[in-house]
Amino acid sequence: MSLLKSFYGSTIGKKVSMALSGLVLVLFVLGHMAGNLKLFAGIDPSSGDYKIDDYGRFLRAIGAEMLGHSGVLWLVRVVLLACLVVHVVSGIQLARLNRRAKPIGYKNPKYRSANAASRTMLYGGLFLLVFIVFHIFHFTTGQLHFSGFVEGQVYANVFYAFRNVFTAGFYVASMGLLAAHLYHGTWSMFQTLGVDTPSWNHGIRTAAKLVALALFVGFSSVPVAIAVGALPAPVETSNIGH
Image 1 (spheres, rainbow, N blue to C red):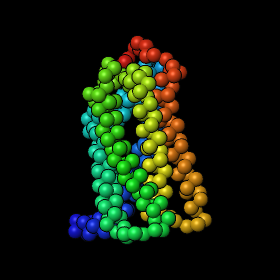
Image 2: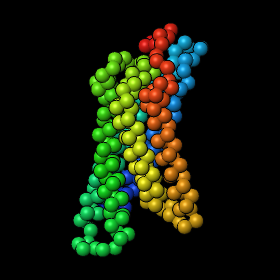
Image 3: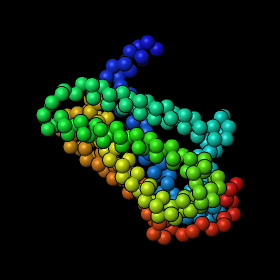
Image 4: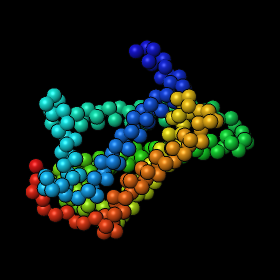
């Protein structure tokens, strides 16, 4: 425990902790986006329900024999929460260390640019933290869903939320900020983990851009499609809510 505390107490320890927790969160976001795209899949003839609703029930049923209904899902949530806490705390602490180390009157343009990027990552990350809390209360628990939230009816809950163009616009803007954060964060993560060579840097930067763009398009496609009427209104299905 003392070794772990000593490691995290160092600047490199904080950077590695932030990079690894960020990697877990990026992988989760990619999986979450892929799941969201099931909204475009419509109704499954075999189950008589929306495929996105079947997917939601599947997630809650994983490992039910060992951990009970939604047990694995809650375990994943705990791990993600731990990674989020580590990521946010490490980011705030590193930003404070950078601010303390800032030379007074330093005029190097590259330093000013790096410092601006750091501030953007910090404040953008704090906004995303607030957004995550809102998103949980909006779609997971439903307290902030003011358009007839019904647990288990994923398609209907998402449709009626994004039928409001202001809500849809807020989510699209938030996804733009998330994409920018992930682009800069992914690039920094590889540097922190030692993958920083001239022969690889161009490919890494390109991959980070493509991942960020894919996430933005994937997440934004749902609210945009609903807001413009490209996705149909929910219909009664045979198994909804079961």
